[in-house]
Amino acid sequence: MGFQYARALLDAATDAVIVIDHRGIIETANAATERLFGYSPAELVGRNVSLLMPPGERERHDGYIHRYLETGITRVIGHGREVEAQRSDGSRFPAGLSVGRINGTDPPRFVGFVRDLTGYQQTLAALEADRDRAREREAEAHRSQARLLAVSRMATMGEMAAGIAHEINQPLTAISNYARACQRFAANQPPDMEDLQDCLNGIADETQRAAEIIRELRNLVRSQLEDRSARDLNDIVRQTRPLILADARVHQTAVHFDTSAELPQVSVEAVQIQQLLLNLTRNALEAVETRADGRREIRIATSQTSEGDVELSVMDNGPGVDPKVEQEMFEPFVSTKPSGTGLGLSISRTIAQNHGGELLVRPGDSGGACFALRLPPCTEACP
Amino acid sequence: MSAKQPTVFVVDDDSGVRSSIRILLKSVGINTTVFASAKEFLAAYDPSQPGCMVLDIRMPGMSGMELQLELNRLGAVIPVVFITGHGDVPMAVEAMQQGAFDFLQKPFRDQDLIHRIQKALERDAAHRSALRQTEAIKARLESLTPREREVLELLADGKQNKVMAGELGLSQRTVEIHRSNVMDKMQARSVAQLVRMLLDVRATGS
Image 1: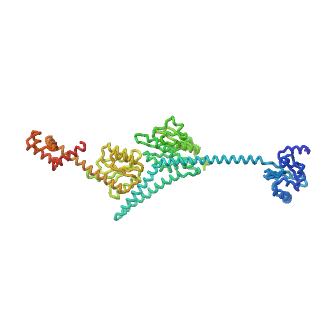
Image 2: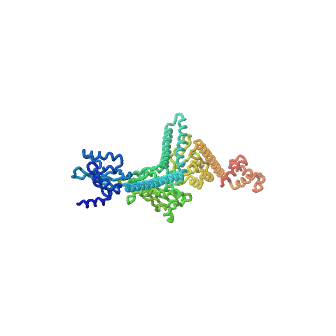
Image 3: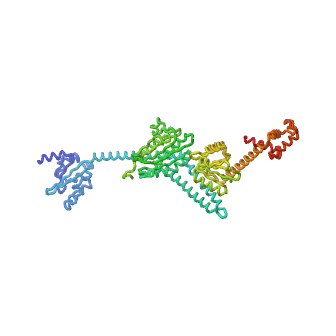
């Protein structure tokens, strides 16, 4: 390979290519070196390569070569490195440097390739900034949605307030009755120990019941995000049961629970599924209110579909869904109820979709409506 | 019939409230039977059983209000004390208009419940004894002969024996005999008491 040919190759390269000897003295520099550093090849040949480094690095460079030649320990040879380089005007730029030893020369010589990383780094920084912004937007959307869900849960709680107050009043009434009876049984001579025991057991049971309702309420109104976990939908139904019964009592409606014995687990944020279930139950309770005969019933069921999905359904014996509104009722702010916010079903559908599932409506067995949440069962990768 | 112990019938779908009322009433020596639903109560309902009812106004299935209407339809006389939750006042008002004896809001003081129940039991006892009285008067009226009934009507109008004799075309002596028979059969000690009996029977609408 002739010198001319090699020179042309070197000059065509976009990276600076510099050959130095064992002292760091530049022997050859290509055309790109001038573009990157602002020195002509003629200016560079015979100068120490440390000239192209910023102060600090410059003083140490001779030591690096010396150490390599003494010990064979490399700092840069064989691995690319990102370094700071200095132009003839003193300005600096980020550079990608790779160095190789030229074999079979005496004294030893080294060839260095220098690439200007300025554009690359700017692009990288811009990309990272974009990605951060996208992440932030996504997080904000997530937070907004969590806030909306929390607000909507609070609204549901508000609508359920009468039922909840009633449901807490029930055990309080019972506790008060038991306590007064206790006083009388204890005042008898001799005291009626058996009746006293019955009363005390009753007080303990009723206290537990009140505490359970309050615990479920607290669970629902806390607004922070929680992680998804593998859950059995039946457990979630069981947990929500006291609140559902509280609401049903005010609406003088019988609730039947029809839970499948065994269900595969689903990956869910439990509080959201509870919220969806309460939304569907509230709708059902309002739907059956129009029944003139007073036989108001809703049925909450879990099952596994033939496709293997896990289904949670709420069926009522109300007037059913008007086919005309069937599609639009899932849109936000669309409500067929005089005091409805129109958010219940739209939020419920969002919750279903967030969990990779769907919310369906179909006619119920007894003429009413049946809303069903379908979720894919957990795979092995489920959290 | 009259030998039956007065009993409080508690109908509440909430087992805690139901059991606690039963034991509370037991602590003051009141006989209580509890039912979990209106249907359950109706199946066991015996109109001749004296007592009163404690009824939860809100229940799934047949509500307390609906049970009251059903009892009205059956011509039941048993007094009903309603137990209502917070915010059920409009319903309680309606129940009172339908003839409820009283109502109590949950949670209530034990004395308030016991007091109302005692009042209701008194009302039931008075009502039942009045009914028995009316039944007895009706039976006595049935035992009068047609002639004696005519004398009774004139007596009640405050007519003198002489006037009655004239109107009925009988001798005064005969009227006196009929009159004495009427007083005996009706077990009336005075004309005033006799008039009272007639008014009572007529007031019950039969």
